[in-house]
Image (cartoon, rainbow, N blue to C red):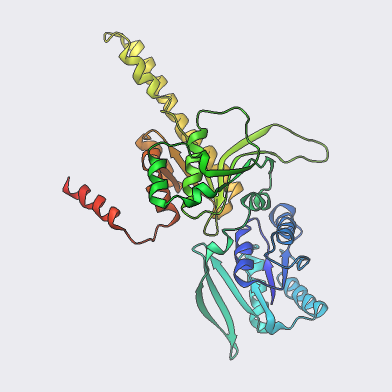
Length: 388
């Protein structure tokens, strides 16, 4: 099969299509726009050449217009003639590109009798198939878990534009001891606060000095791996992309955990400490109750400013995942403390999942497998909740 696909900044329509269709040749159709089309196409070609999704050397870059409707169709006809395509063995993916490119390539496919598809965010292909001079549609679900084995750092590098990976961090997988433990025993030990490191194998490097939140990061990674994630990357650092004139060594963002699941990149931010605003609450307990109004107002202001920091961290995570994971990126915040309602509202509005450390296993399981049927423990917990 020859797959012709419109390249754009979002890589997942290309990656998922390649994993699902397994084309012999993959033609990435891009415009001359370096940021929006040519650059992403070049990164995708490097990724496909190294990942095994497409036979090595089977990915080709082909430039088409992004502003001349008729020129797009002429270019595709020229490409078909030069490459001697059997049009019956061609498939067009018009999910990417701008609207003019998508419309022009679709019309070309309809006129030439070429099958085409569009990929929805819910991992559903809508096929457009020529028949009796018309185009008929049919939906087909796409299994995003076909990409679970792909290296999350390689996918991250493919998606990044303004940044680059300064340090890939550690690759974590379950070792033999972690694999031998039953899921119930494993998760019970995690929730009881046992150190997860004895159940993990490490490659790569992170910070040499141990940090306060390291134990939570390892617990989250171990839980994800036991729930089915193939590998978790820990402690990545990103820096602004270097140019020929300017180089930089300073990181501008650190990602606690990164993994691939269900056709998406997932970014996890872990905080294993009480929120800073609780310091003010504790301070009040040690101060005289008869504080004057100015002192009370100052404490209220300090507490409010510290609370804003929680939302700021989430905003930074959101910005990072929008570049790192694209439109199909997910952010998960794992917190020891219960967050204020206004922070939770911000998280809900921006589709950021919040998981409490006390409910780590169930919280992560629900995120990874939201459609799983309820088991006996779930039903018992629900019944207890309603009895209250």
